[in-house]
Length: 396
Ligand code: ARG
Image (cartoon, rainbow, N blue to C red; front, side, top):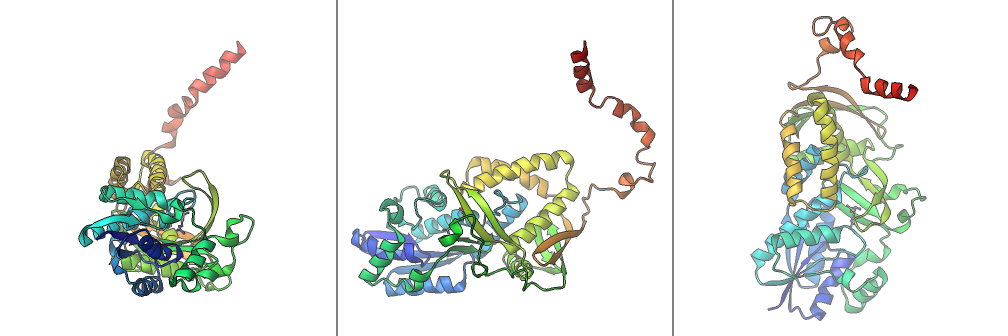
């Protein structure tokens, strides 16, 4: 038996891989769909198409693991790649890991097959993850390796009778998981084209968002959001609730210029309501409990973490080193944050923590116990001393 395992989304690219791999000589085809929170219809469609094409199909529910071990660490690192909360990026390593585990379970898999194109970041992330966990199994990427185009794929699917449904009429390329939704393709590629309302599914438009504000209270323990408005949730449920709350108020639409790994600058649209809300709340609490030196350094660490996450290098030692620092800081990120949501805006309106470094008494103008102002005179005198000496040099 010569078996291929296709990492299967049910979309056009991965669906054409099924007959293509049969033609390439694989006499057994397995397909696996990793559920990281894409719409239930997508999972069902993949299952249906796999059934029609007669593959040995598997669905892995990785939602809880994704929420706990990928999205929550992203919160700790204030995930931000030039405005992008890294929603697609952080799901890829898990998809690859789960596919490698499935391959081991099925046994005798001679090749992995994925549908990534040659222009995106996902090819790097997926193949790295597969090589990490199943280095002995070769990887095929037919769309990239054979230079396939959409038009060719549609034509081919029709010729061989592969079910591709409305793929023909689909204008946008969408990738969805619990941490957010990426929308690309079609006219959106032109940065001067305003995103049409129809691309958004999770966030209300400015017009449709409620005309009364809503204040939401988050409770954090060790950097993990654990409760919303007094109700405790599992990581998975908490993300679902956060997405709904922020989405209802139209919070989390993102339109950026993005620098892809291959050096390509592209325009990207995202809607990440829950991520936007949780990242803002987490940052606000971190700011209350960390020292200036920690904050200044963590900005750099977070930026490095984002670079690694964008590259999909989840298990690289450096990522672990960064996580060690980030994790150490999280031990004091405990407390409550209140956020006001209104007409696509988000405002921090309150924060409290047993670890707060803020002292009202010390900051107050009326206090003379913590620090008497007159004591500052000497310290102020030496401020900028070197600069003053330097300026004098020029005069002589
Ligand atoms: N540009 C984003 C990233 O690289 C989103 C990619 C979306 N992927 C997709 N297959 N539609 O993380």
